Image (cartoon, rainbow, N blue to C red):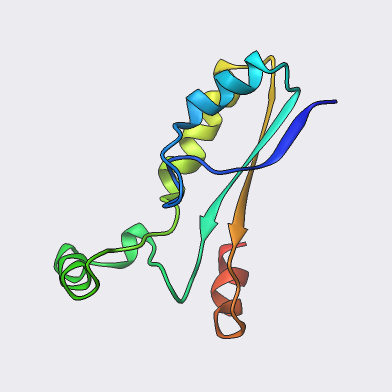
Length: 111
């Protein structure tokens, strides 16, 4: 069985590959399963709804870059849409956690 269980999409800051394009390419390669594992890195990045617009602007000015975790609402909605649109491939959902000892409680709450 052909599958890939470590795929990053445009929901990760290290990729600009649209989820739907990943799925289409996987189907072309005759994959049976695919699992998206976009990044969540508490202690380094912020959740989309965690900061006000003013806080985002301040951090962007200070660091030159604002790093955000996966936008969970949009991420899981897009996965559900693609699962329904492309029944010929199994699309699984996951997240890749960059865990540091002091961030474990945040991950436990997310899970």
